[in-house]
Length: 292
Image (cartoon, rainbow, N blue to C red):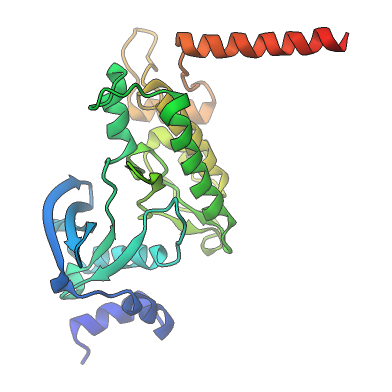
């Protein structure tokens, strides 16, 4: 008779290589010290903590989600994280557990939180330190960081699709810029002929994901476009979408509009953007005059 711990690894891996990958990154559960709850989601929670004197983030299942199936799915996410090694992917440090249901992922701590919180603070045009957030001084650098992470993921063999790219899953550090995180619903492209419909968060979803059609890594690029719009407006995608009576569209109506192609992302019309467009038109006009 197998112990619950042994049964967990049998269900998880299927063969010794998979189990070995997880065991190779195991760290001492007693050496991980939690400090403060940072965030809670539908399935997990993230705590700040210390591991061997280093600030870390501790991701684990919610107490009510600590079932065998949820623990196995979380362990699969951890196994995927062990494959990733890039300066613009949040560093995975190790996994710790005292039993199968207590498994937790230990990652680097990003001291400025997520991009969504940064944009929320900047909706009044200033962050908490009084720094004006513009494309020139901050936003463009963060966007390039995310693009670098996507290039890396999509260059792996097999290609790695994030599938849930949004501002909440982009973490910010004062020294290291933006890094991509949260691979809970990522998949290797060649694992499934047709991927599961309805994953991700609907306002960032590509039409083919909403429809449940076959898709590839291009869906991450679509979501990245939604993030760029979000960065430009400091609002979630389609924040301005309304019915003809002026009431705001709910998520199901937004999904239908995306599939039908009737919804378009809003972009900023700030004076700075207008100056940039005027400058670009002048340069084009100058080149045309020179050519003539």
